[in-house]
Length: 295
Image 1 (cartoon, rainbow, N blue to C red):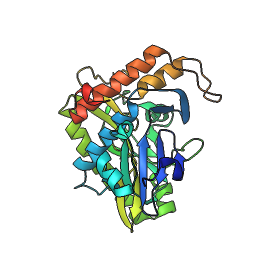
Image 2: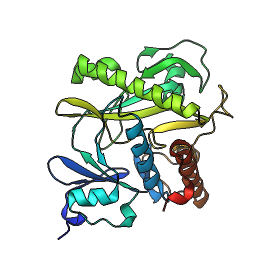
Image 3: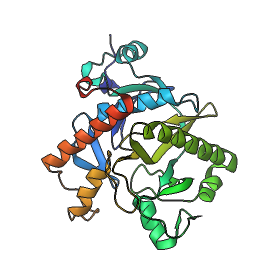
């Protein structure tokens, strides 16, 4: 008799529902929920979960020679066979089976361009996370080399920017150096791949865990939820670039008058539709699938 999802212990994150299969494995379901500024928004983005999952599966395969990852399988039939579940077609492009790891409680952000919160901090201090940068940089300008700017990882509330020394004190210099080096190596690989597709990977958030003391990549990889993607054709330092990611939603929220303390507002229909369209475009650029392949 097949196991039912409702029988499994579940952790509901901002975007993913994570089910404990046994002491070694997790079932991860990417939903259509969207979060911004550490809030889950009241509206869903059609097909978003499928797109995020397919992009992550692509990058896990592409980068496995740089670092191992937590993925066991992203194929529904095999997942059902390995777990004893009987998941239907709703899950076919939004589910993955992964190893449980000891999560490193930092979000590992690599910035190749100066934008977002990094740009705001630079304007105030001339630095990002205590990394001194040259004076006179323009918004969205490419940095001479990517920088590693971790944040704490909060299950609830806001993540906090920290510097590399803080991270090293918490997890040890050797592990911190390895995470930093692998994060930058992964970013450079993905940036070089995307630029050939006419897309600039401005920055990215990565997460890591330990599996039997081996460092591996977990969670997601270079998705429009965790990275900034810009149109290389229209890119020009000094102005806000055209993007294919969650920034479209962030910009609307910033202009909506929302105080970022109370419940977020509902997204207008055109914002939902355009966000879904942008996610489809970036998936096609990265993975090469046509839109019809998304259910």
